[in-house]
Length: 302
Length: 297
Image 1 (cartoon, rainbow over the protein chains, first blue to last red):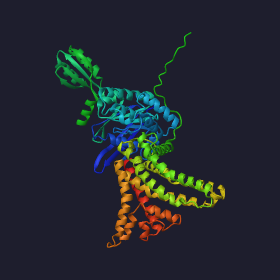
Image 2: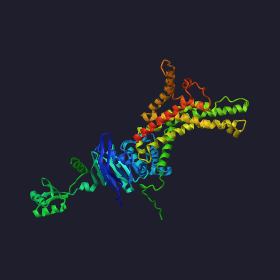
Image 3: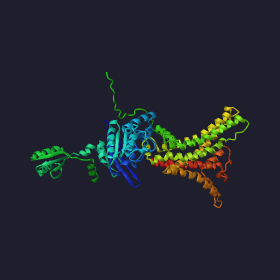
Image 4: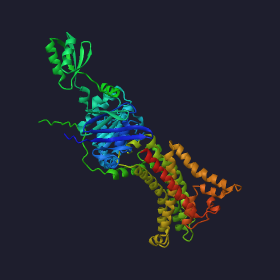
């Protein structure tokens, strides 16, 4: 697998006058489906606009697919797609006309634009409605049209800004399903969202922003699994705690349930040894169930 | 053996064909601009006004040539009473003024109001490319309004000439640069102002109204201010009549200075002053439009 970063930043910063939106942002993100997570005002949209070449960074630099965002804007825009959070659809043309136009704007010849428009509208489930004016579309249909314009030209990387905004539960499920499928088409994805559950559903890597800085960055599995073991002890809890502490484990105790971690050893092995040595049993044992939300809240509190 | 159908899951196929990059993006935006101002690929009601204006611009030329044909058939010695190329600009200028009032807002305002600029911002297109191609679309249609009737008249009258078609074409060839120059002046006088107003206004109807206000009410106001003889420098108010300047320059190009009752001519301004006003207003307007789009794209 090619791990050359598709997105990189070095000391990246941007300020709107005296308001600092991004500061000292650094990351190297490999190909795949990347979640850009942060509360409103965390700097997600500013970062996307810098990566698209719409905004110039006030400090540092960023690259997209190896191209510098300030010098190679047209090279980047020839290779990416963008689904904005806000409305971006002309209301008086049909979905088909608009997607053909979006493909043409990306440089596809007319025949290819027509063919791909038809294919992509079918892919997003709008084949029946493709000749209807966009002004009459529901929110869910508009979101799918926005996704279609972002991928119609077969980009290497697509930026999706709050793709599930305004969708009902059914529409949200359909959108997440579509996003999950994009990786299989060879399209890298950066999904910006404040709905952490959406990121957990669709992404394999996360970049967390908080107050314009990088809070966490890494594979989702590393962030949410965090080598912490949860064990529900059956018997003398204090003896087990004492044994684990002596073995160098860090323990967060709450009644009979212990959260055990260790920087030096496998916490599962330490729990097994402690239970065996003290002659106690257990009701359950497993990795701590950690959501992205827990990681985000934990990180933003520190 | 029974024939078996095969179901293919086409899913998503990568595009491995040509990608034309910025060149393709510019061509697509330009073509969209032409379609948009003419209502092509739009609902029927969006086609009505532009195509009515096309008819208004061209029909008189056809009528003139038709009457000239009748005259040449039934009274070969009679001189055609129908307009010259210079006079015909008086007809098309009004049509172009109406067209710019309707077309310039259609080119710029929906993209901004409906957020479509975000799509352009993710394509290989610079803000200057966007403004440039939109302007080129408008100028192309204006050129069509201005030049197609002139070509019909030029070719039509030549075909009816007793000197023969090709000789008449050659005899009147000196009209061609004049026609092109006059058309360029009208386009420069109207299009940049229309695009500037459409850059500032948030609604198409408002932009159309403001354009008429600037061009027509402004010219009437200029005429009224010029009459206010008690005000020092009142004659300079004539320069505010933006709709009159291209006519003054056109008359100059065709050697007809003084033939029109223009306020700017009555107040003693030479045609070159009108040309300077047209160029300065066009330059300033275009600069503001580009500056604004560089900020929002």
